[in-house]
Length: 144
Image (cartoon, helix red, strand yellow):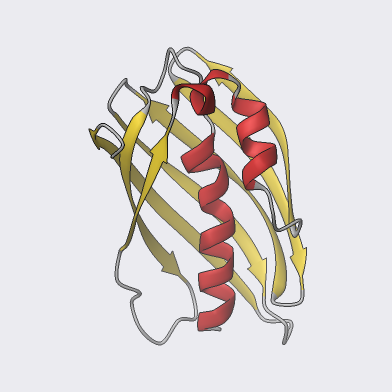
């Protein structure tokens, strides 16, 4: 179960870290924190934090950045929309660690963003789970 959660959390970060046009997000070093809530988990998973350097070319073409980051083909993103400073999408994931579908929404400023990803999952044993990820990101400076 924990492995399923970690794999899906990593997959769900793809659009979070990757999707934003330059008008919404500045290049530089970004720190992303994800908090996961999941039904049926015997423990609360601690927040996960990661850093990523986004170069000017990374934020220039958001669809290309998503394609580059989508190394694991277990999830398919659809209905990717940008309206003002809000980005939303739907996704379906299928793989050896389970399957699920859900939606995500992020709200961006130039140096911060926050949002929520909600998924309905089925683990390899056929057990259903609801998962909610709360995501926040902040620009911490230039890439070194």
